[in-house]
Length: 508
Image: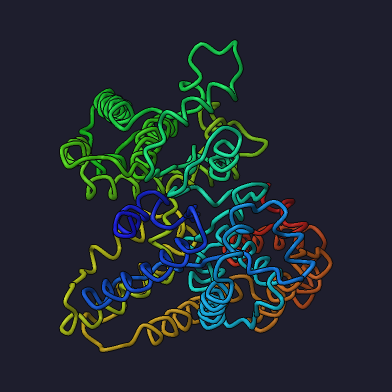
C-alpha cells in the first residue's frame, strides 16, 4: 500500500499542488505506516538522487493519563481512546519519535506534554498548501498526514484533495471522511480523490443512497465523477473541436500556427477551444487508475510535447488579449474578447515553479556533469507553458539566453545571478524612461520605490517629479500622461498581481 501511494500520489494531487490524508484503522497501524514511508523514501532516494521525498506527518492522541485536555480531545476519537489503553508507554514512545522527526523537519519545538499545539501546527501546515512554493517553500508543507480518527470530521482545507483509506467506514462516518476532500476550489480541483484499499464499494453505495434521500433515482451520478474512459472521450472531442476550429481559420492544428490567427476574435476563438482541451487534460492527470493502453491513447490524441507548445501559445495569446481588454476600457472591444475568461489557473503547474526552473537552469549550465541533460529549448518551452511564471517569463527567457551552456554555477548562484540580472535590467529600463522624459534616474527610482513601498500612487508626487522641467499646466499634463504610459507596465510587473491604489486612472 505504501508503494502504491508513493507511485500514485503525484497524479492524485496534481503534481503535489494539493495534499492528502491517510486514514488508518488503529494507532499501531498508523505507526507502522509512518515507519514504512520513511524507509521506502530512503530507498527511493538512494535509487534516484533527484527523487523529491514527500513530507509525511502523523498525528494521533497520546494516552490521556489524567490530562483533561487530552481527555476532551479523545471524546470524539473512540478508536484512539481504546487503542491507548493497550501498551500506552509504547504509544507514547512512538509519538515522541514522530514529533521529534517533525521538529527536525519544520524547525519547531513541540512536545507530547503540549500535544494540542502540535496538532494545531499540523492542521496549519496542511492548509499552507494554498501558498505557492515560491512564496512558501515545499519543505514547510505537509504532503500526506497519517491519521486514525483525527481530521476525518470537521477539518476543511480547499487544498486537501485526496484521502487514502485503509480503514472500514460506513454511513455518516464514510460521508464525513470522504467530504474532507471535495471542497471545490477551481477547475484544477473539480472533485476529491478517494483511494480505497479496503474494497468498500458496497458501503460507499449504501452511504451515498442514504445521504441522497429517497427521491434520487441514481445518486451515484450526482456524487461520483465520470470514469477515466468517459473523460478520455470528452478530451478526444475537445481535441477534435480545436482541430476543426484551426482548419476553419485555414490553418493547421499546430502551436506555431496559433500566431498566424488573424484578428482578435479568431484568437479569442482559439482561447475558448484550447481551454477545454486543457480542462480535460487537467482532470485526466488526477486519475490514478488509467492503464497503459489509455495513456497511449491520450498521448496519441495530443502528445505532451505538442501540449506544452500549445500551452505556451495559449498563454502568450491570452496575455495579448488581456492587455487589449485592459487598454480598451471605455473603447470598442469585441464582445467575444470582452467575455473571455482566461482561466490561467488551468495552466499553472505546481511542478514548474520558480525553484524548479532555477534547478533546471543549474543542470543546463552543468550539463557535462549531469546525468539528465536539459537543453535551452526545453527550458524555454517549460517556462512558456506555465502560468506560474507568466509575469517573469520574458525575464527568465532572456536570462537563459545570457548563460553559457557550461559555466559550473550552483543552483544558489543561478538564483543570485537571476536576481542580479533582473535588477540590472530594471535599472536600465528606469534609466531609459528617465532619459526619454528628461528627468533624473535617481528621482524616478525614488518615485517608484515610494509607490511600491506603500502600494499607493500619489498624483502630487508625480507633479513634484516633473516640477524641475518648469512646464505650463497643459504641457505638464501631457508630460505626465506620456511618462505614465511607459511607467504603468513597469509598475504592474513590480506589483506581481497586487493592486496599486490610484493607478487605475492612468491604466484607463
